[in-house]
Amino acid sequence: MTETDFFKCLSDSTRLDILRIILAKQNVCVCELTELLNLSQPKISRHLALLRNFSILLDQRQGQWVYYRINPELPEWTKVVLETIAKQSDTLNTRINLSSSIVCESIV
Image 1 (tube, one colour):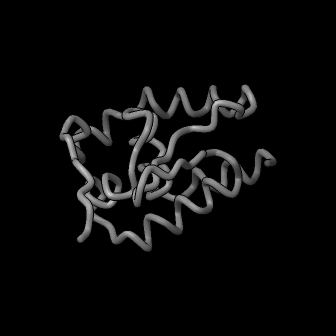
Image 2: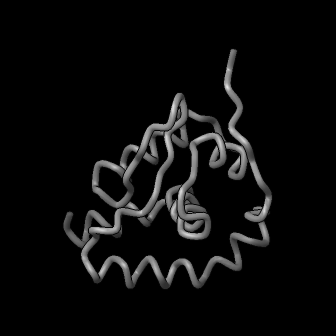
Image 3: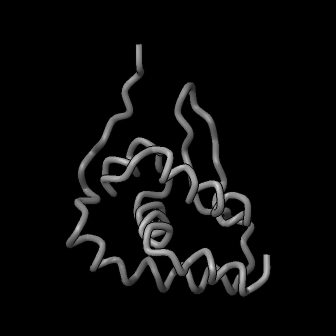
């Protein structure tokens, strides 16, 4: 991943919000992101795919749900940028209640 690719990923407000949520909650399911951001699952998944393709995020399947987390193997310079973003999450917290607990339910 180049610096340009990294900053292009961060240039979209939805992707930036996704990263802020994941930075705050550590391990986040797609259903949580759709609920918190009030966006459709396909739209969230498109953004997550881009972040995953550039290895910014890692995914892990647990049953039918996929959880995302920040890749711990990111270059050090990206971690500094992400830490800065995490510290600036006050604007996100005023729009989104990150303390709410969303439980992903099985679809029968």
